[in-house]
Image (cartoon, rainbow, N blue to C red; front, side, top):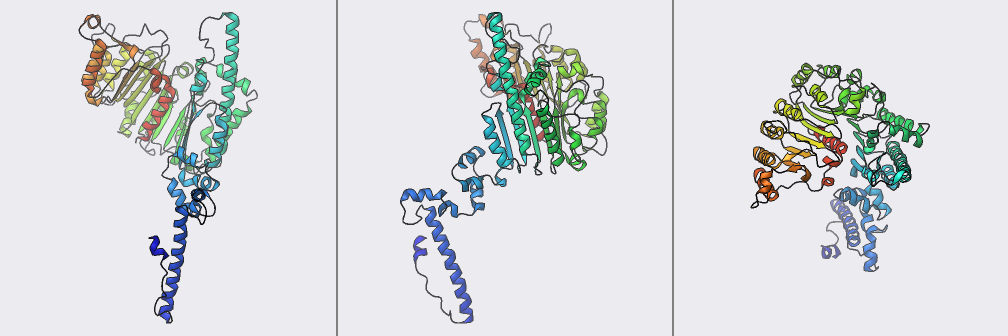
Length: 555
């Protein structure tokens, strides 16, 4: 190819005639294109002239030749094949690459998981300054692990008894650390909201903040907030920015805000124009820190969202009137409904206004594809009996307990009422004393978990921690569901053996359990040895939020 380009081209015959002149003009243009191509090939081969080989390689990032000679559109297309982390690394090569790497077409979506640390702020500011004004899909998660390390939360004493003086010093250090966490959290939230306040291309906006762990200590979060933001200016600024983003949006179809501290108010949705509310497809507002009986959305406000296909709310906010609104003829059929049942909400709000069985039947008639996802935090059995109506098309349920344990009667009720729909069942009990796990099969002829596996023919995920699971029942579950049970996560400390199994000297009970369960499932299986490796056990809020997102997207 290079030899062909270097051969001199003869003058075309007949150049003196009118037709020959036209051919000559075409010939000259072709030669000019060939010369430009020759120069480009020399640059790409690292030979920009008489320079050394090293200068030739460096010319790829230079201004005179090499990659700089390529059109910016071509560079953008080449970089589109790189994953996001590699694009960010490549942006440090030169200013021309940096300009091309932050072309809007390369960043249609941005998903960020942030540690609540001051070191994150400059990186976040750089990324949001480059992409915040044009990104179409933005998902931001504020991770909790960095402020949970070294202490379980405000008021957690931890460690050995160090006396009154030691406890006071430790409490002071813990208080200082949590104040810094809240201060950093507010700054990071402000950085995100400021950067997208004028973005009119935003179509999906999702925020998750695991800072809600503060709320486990009641009103302690308000005490810390009053110290970090004594006059409430930052909180008001955050709320105003959020409402400004909603009012400026022109293409927003997905709005999700979960466990964020003091960002969504009962008046936030009024900032959305009617045209945007009418085209919204997903709405998720999960916050159990709203005081009193106030809610983030009312039935009247919900009437504007006529195209809503997926909804996620606190269960106490989902009233019978809302169910009636969703069954109106002017609303499209709702296909996904995620509900958070939190003991804090149940304590401050009444369950009297929740939908009855007739409302659920009407919703199911309106949309035959409606599926419900429920997560229950520390809910008493008597309250769960009120909540679990027979006509709920319940597909997923997640129990997470710190004080109140789930009873065998609740598990049995779920297996009988939702046998046609249930696919995911998670049972979590985060107790401190691992020697006394509750046994769901006490005083019962059959183990409720075995009955669940037998009745629920669509069950594909079962995760258990903090409840006694007998080895022979675990084998029965694996045999009943077989390869249809894609995920079976049971922590090692939850598994117990009969005395007869332990007394048999010829068989290792643990090895036999692993072998039999693996054989039943048709795939290798082992108990969960490290609970920290699974977010479903260690970060229930985050797990629920992510599962809710994928549950809503799977329409």
